[in-house]
Image 1 (cartoon, rainbow, N blue to C red):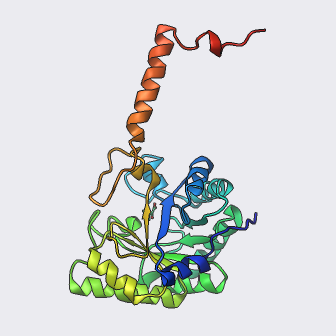
Image 2 (image 1 turned 90 degrees about the vertical axis):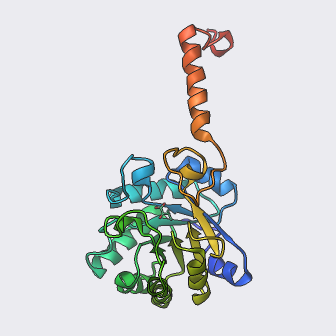
Image 3 (image 1 turned 60 degrees about the horizontal axis):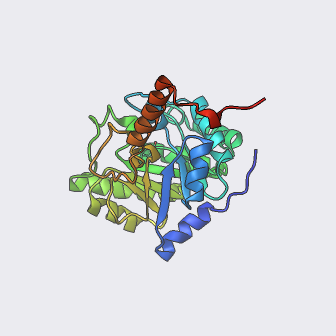
Length: 270
Ligand code: KIV
């Protein structure tokens, strides 16, 4: 499956040099992908957050290659302009560089997406370099890396002391040198994200990392108010769709029970 996307990795890097903010958002299916694409986002991330947002899991660790490939394919089907990136799930790139390249290549072959994203710093640099050599565009992910939630002791802000902040800067530089075209920065103090952003020439895309990143990404279901249990400080909800769904379905249920739906105009004459 091949597809010509309007937005490319080159465009995203050029946006940083022009000082234009990159707008990124997650989607997991063709319907929402077509809506966010029509709204003009630059990048759609098929995040492994689907494990928690769609499947009700506590963490993203259960996401599988099969799930990411399936959701990647249907997101690509619904997208005509934005650049689509698919998350590599836990254990699909950490075991060996060979496995990482094969899994990343298969994601691109089977979804039609433009790139993969993987989490981590120095420990993934060899895998990133090998993928890029194989012609696979890679997005990095630093700071709070959800696949390492247990190792990090929970959802904690990263890079809080000088040593940790400097390490994040060095890891970003190493990812850029390995060929990553962009880096997600998750949950870190605003000045640290600004330092990382200044240190690299590829764009940073922040989530809970303040306004100085080159772009921002949010989980669609969170910003639409559909994922009501999740309300971190960085999140802004732009709609209250959870309440809207409950209200609409509640009214439908009431009308079915009282017999006012379907009304005469909803029936078919012979
Ligand atoms: O899985 C995901 O949705 C992500 C974003 C939070 C960046 O990685």
